[in-house]
Image (cartoon, rainbow, N blue to C red; front, side, top):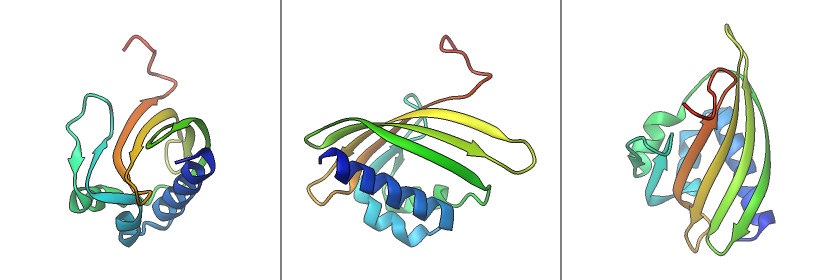
Length: 120
């Protein structure tokens, strides 16, 4: 996948997350996809597990840029700011691997926030 294709996937991901559209998961992720909410977390495996995690009604803003894209692999820098009762900001790196249909087989998130230093 090239950078434009990866950015298109990220935009569809954001739209689906914002709309809480669990039906969009199938178009974003491969059947046996592994979704790691942190690099050491047990992965969510498969579409049903990802759908179960998908809905989050907290309002947010998001910006993203593709850092690298080569073959099926990509790295994306993402900044998310959640609103609501207690605002929270995250800076993430997403490590992605795509199948031949442009769906993520692997989604690995490296999230940081202001209270979390790099040594934690």
